[in-house]
Length: 92
Ligand SMILES: [Zn+2]
Image (cartoon, rainbow, N blue to C red; front, side, top):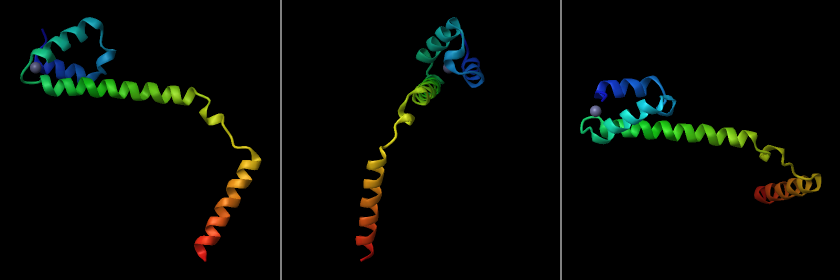
């Protein structure tokens, strides 16, 4: 069983999911049972998980084709005309 200091040091050095399974299990056991560092280190582990999900989502977004979508020239011209008209009416 890890001590509070060992769990905190391990979480400071590496992302929770980068630790081997046996260490994660022991850290989880400590965090679930400990009244001193349990709440704090649970939040640290949740933050690591959120960061991992964010990075995964950003990579998926960068790999998707969403940036390849372009407007047709006719739609661009129509939008420009609408913007110009609304700018002119705002000036009047
Ligand atoms: Zn503890």
